[in-house]
Image 1 (cartoon, each protein chain N blue to C red):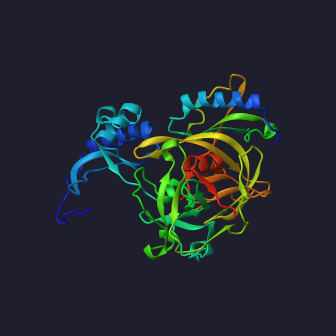
Image 2: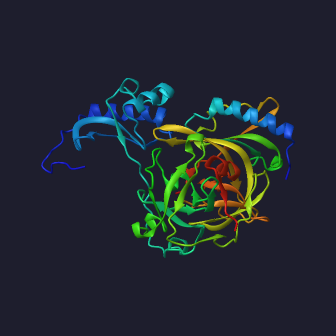
Image 3: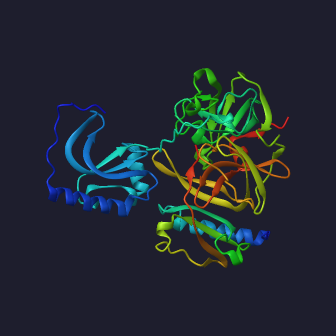
Length: 330
Length: 83
């Protein structure tokens, strides 16, 4: 956002500023826990199209996704209570599209899972070419119709937007682990978010070999329905090999998806096992949870909580069915 | 660990769906599922319908104690996608 360095802003009237703060508090009461809201503040209105900051004082809601035009009308018709309006807040309002992330570049030695791997296997770093982040390559699958070999991970790792361009490149390691176009290992094929499953597949480019192996665990032997009390293990880019126990099934959760809240279904809940160690960490999205004794894949990891320590995954049989793929065990 | 009967699971799924209709769109509700009552140490093997919510709204979120004979519990948690 460029601003004329010689531009000056008017002095703010203290009475107006106090009114803005009260309006900010009203906006917080109604909207701060909306998962699409990333920040609420008082500031100058931003004219995004003209890339200019104005001198109008507003209360600003910073949204991860800001639906516009027809998308906004559809959103408003289904989510009237989530619309942020000046009438409701009682002060000029500005809506800014922004997604803030904590920056954690602490200079730790790069994880071995964050380097180039050949052959490809489950538990290593990947990302798509557009998002500066990393997730986990879950494992290798086969398209039931075309027999094409693919990798299976989350939609929010491999695509991350509702309209993913055909052939979006997938890097190994992920972009934030130093991945770049020469590290392209696959091209995005399809996802299952429209049916409420945060999962996607990308077709391998044959640049590297593959092996049925979860780094630090061993080969996957197939898939199974997750059950309460099942002891499970996974191999992830960040927390590596961790264990857990399934304490919840048939969960439903809403996630932002193109300006709307999409219901994600068939969620399984994983808690710490008796070792009380970490279950998962950012960067583990896309890992496969396996039943410990059989190494049958029961869940696709997609989210976690640190306090208390829990992981969330989607039932693997439902994932495979939605994407019309099967796990390659040979 | 307790294994629920098929009949109980059918009732639990219906109860979960009813709760989801009522609470899933609440901005502080993170997840609704069927599972162990982890926040009751004396009863942690009991299977209930669980509403996972951010701690700040624990008192304000009025979930019923049971639906159609299936116990309902509020659990504190806050989840983030892990990419």
